[in-house]
Each structure stands twice: as C-alpha cells, then as structure tokens.
Image (tube, rainbow, N blue to C red; front, side, top):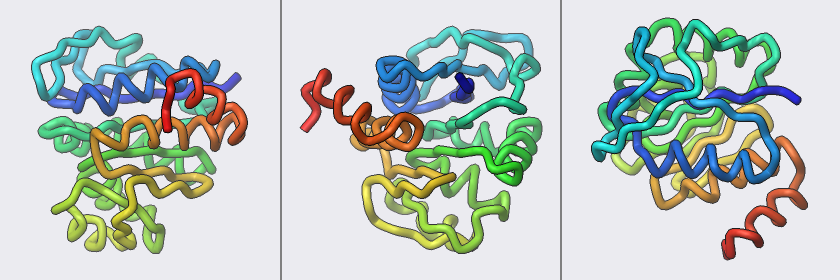
Length: 186
C-alpha cells in the first residue's frame, strides 16, 4: 500500500488536518502526518491545539507516495508556502504523476504559485480566488473540486467531504460511502 503524507506547519487548521487523517485511516489508507519544523515533532495549530507529527520532513519518501496533502489555516498555509523542501517535493511529486490535495487557503497560497496547475479547476477559501487565478488556475466556488490528480476544498466545514473525495479517488466510491455511512455523514 502506498503511503500518503499530510504536512503540518505552525498555524495549520486543525479540523482540516485531523479530519482528513481520521477518515483516511478509517478507510484503511496509510497516511502519516509530517512536521515541517526542523527537528520538532510537535506543531501548534491555528487554534492552539498541539499535534505530535508521525514524521519530520527528512523522513518523507515520496517515491512511493500516493497523496501529498496540505491543510489550510493561517499562517499554516503561508508557512507551507515558505518551506522550500515542501514546495519542491510538491512540484516533483505532481510532475511524476503523484496526487496532491489542498484545502482552505492552501490551494491559493501554496499550490497556485508553483505554476504546475495552470488550467486546472480548483476551489479555495472565499477571498483567495485572485491568488488561484494569478497562478493560472480556474477558481470554482464549489465546496470540493475533485480531479484525478488534484483535489481541493474551500474550508473547515468541507473537511469531511474533502477527505471522502480522497478516499473515493484512492479506494473507490463504495469505500467512501461505507466510511461516510459509519460516520452518519449525509
């Protein structure tokens, strides 16, 4: 089974990060949280919740990775965008056919400036649409936009739908529906 990685930067949106990890694990997917901080596993989210990451950046092996996932939150998205090892990893992973998912401000703040999603449809937190279009992406006001290699969502209230889209892409719609049913989603 391929491993997926969800990156934690200071100021990440806790709901968007932890909901995704929880739902992916319920579906049987191997997802690991990664601190972008040098030598520090514990990362503090936008609302003061501290999370101990599974790994540090140097421990990430993208050669066999399925998903690289970026939660939003501010300044979490800005901190991810400023992490050059992460942005280089995202570009390389996508160019090799890997999958990327981002929610809230992250599609606009982290992904759009990379210049690799030109012409791709995406959604983001309201008010960040101009940053998407500056990066050559097409802004869509939907809660979740799911493409074969790129999934984006607009914010915390969409975290479950976002995570279930990732599960559907990886495991099929039936598995996503089973997980959703177990969560009493819908």
